[in-house]
Image (tube, rainbow, N blue to C red; front, side):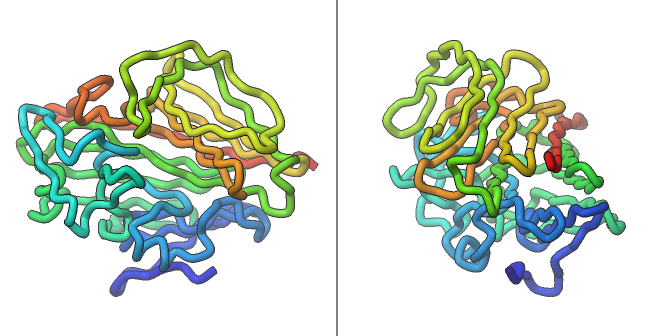
Amino acid sequence: MTPVRTGQQPAHTLVAGELEAVFLPGQGMLGASLTLAGEELLGRVENLESSAAKGGTAGLPMLYPWANRLAAPGYRAAGREVTLDLHSALLHLDEHGLPIHGVPWARLPWQVTAATGATLQARLDWTEEAWLAVFPFRHRVELSVDLRPDGLLVETAVRANAGDAVPVSFGFHPYFSLAGNARGRWRLQLPPMRRLALDAQGIPTGVETPFAGWDAALSESSFDDGFVLGGQTAAFCLSAPDRRLTVELLSGYPCAQVFTPPDKPYVALEPMTAPTNALSRGDGLRLVQPGGAFQASFRIHVERLH
């Protein structure tokens, strides 16, 4: 797999023990690869050029400034009414024609601020006029990734450093694959949560129902569901006989999306700072006041089982 590159910004490779991670600062700080002893753990990384061209998700993308879809081509947040241009190259539309996952990762170049052999820090100054047409709140986003021998820590800060209050509705969409193991040998573990009822377009209706958790072989079982956590932290686990991947929500992520299409060799366990469509409904939407900051973190824990 040859990572996509943009302009003069190369891919950054991090190494810690048997783990190796590749990030693309010039294209959304995309996590383009995460390998254990050379075996790829991320899904949908085979053709990043095609994903970038189509505006689709792949690997480990940050979804910014909103995760998942909006119910309409516009929203009202922090006292501002925003109308989106559905023909804009800065938007990607889902099968219903709804804006999904904010600005495509390939169109958001980050500036590297620090890097070592196992860490990478970058920032995104949300001041471009084209970006402000999509999300009219000037601010800065800082992203730090720290690769350790047992996993990857991802920390994000949203800083309202330009006089605007900033709505927080982003998330991450890591795709995982357990190469060398048939899907019938994958096991999925989900904690007890509250499941969000969705309409036909995948938009929360406002109704929540108890979800007792899940611990079973994945096989052809399918999820495409949004959840609200029962506490401040949670863990989501995908395993095979020889390895286990655990997404640990450490802080700032009260919601999650679980996506396990039955006919695909990957699953997505997605940390979210707010429910789907929070920019429109306001449910669970937090604001960073001018001069303030919002911070969130999650970790991908990687284990060998044999």
